[in-house]
Image 1 (spheres, rainbow, N blue to C red):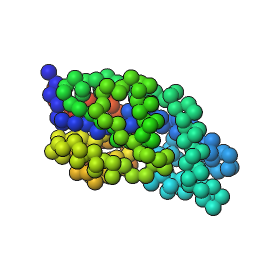
Image 2 (cartoon, one colour):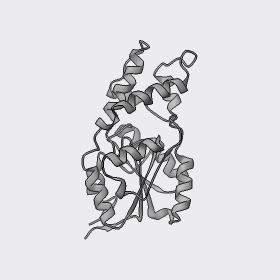
Image 3 (cartoon, rainbow, N blue to C red):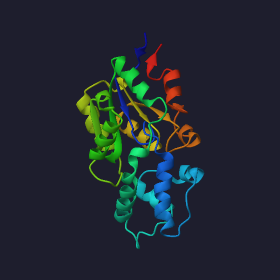
Length: 219
């Protein structure tokens, strides 16, 4: 019987459990095309996407004297939300969440997504029973999750070594380091393998590898 390595798993949502990589490229290309700016492909997106999101927008060439970051954020989120439910989960996500829960490990989500919308989309996939807490931001501007993470880890009241954060970006690694817990990065989302591996030693290519390599459960 599989034995858990951790008592609690904190998951990122977008890019880690939800496969919205290509969808985000398409939405952003809509904003870029309306301003005659160079469009994104997968390689360029992986090269320039980062947190804070404001800096990412600047690298794409947006002129904040013409369109404020706040206006651009509203435009992006409005377009993203229009068809967000067309995004699938990553392969094996639902089964993995079920296996972790069955092993007696509690789980939560810590996301830069808006809190209310996060609840709605997790519910859309029937996953609410898998989590003891969903934590998203209270605005659409995707600033750091670190403060939310600190508050949550204090409320959990578990030893730091018993909690693991799983994400798909270097920001997730920074959040884990800020709150003093271990982290595994999955290179199937918004940051590519080479960027993740340059900063962290625990990187897997997909959720299946996360399970097969024993980061969550011991065989």
